[in-house]
Image (cartoon, rainbow, N blue to C red):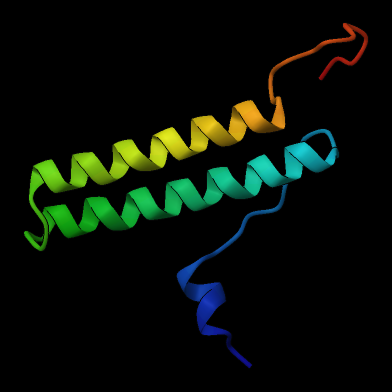
Length: 83
């Protein structure tokens, strides 16, 4: 049976280092990309203004950055974990 949500919100497999914070951030990143795509399409088709699209994408970017900071992605406090 075809699931409408899988069609609207596709998810790609994660190939990076398997850690809970990496998996969560990857899901957030995929959602960000999907939503930016929708916003871009709405702006291109004239459904929303360029300024509205910019504001929405900027807000999504700030949410993604906040998520990255909270999950401590890219920080290596112990120095021994590479990848």
